[in-house]
Image (cartoon, rainbow, N blue to C red):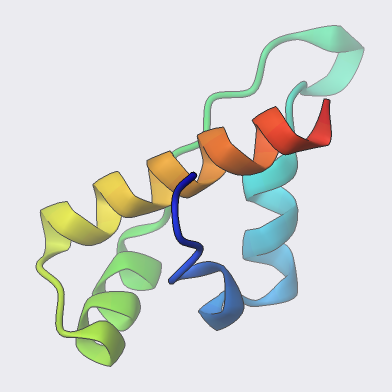
Length: 68
């Protein structure tokens, strides 16, 4: 189980983007976090850019797995 360290720091639109599975007409949605979001989170947490990016993807996998 991954600890959700970044989830509480996200805004509403970022949370919705992480939880989104499909685009319009059922096409798969690939999550790509915005660069300014990653920079903001890296400043707040003290993690590097790559660490924040990988942590967001791990948290997304965990949230989508729990949602099923």
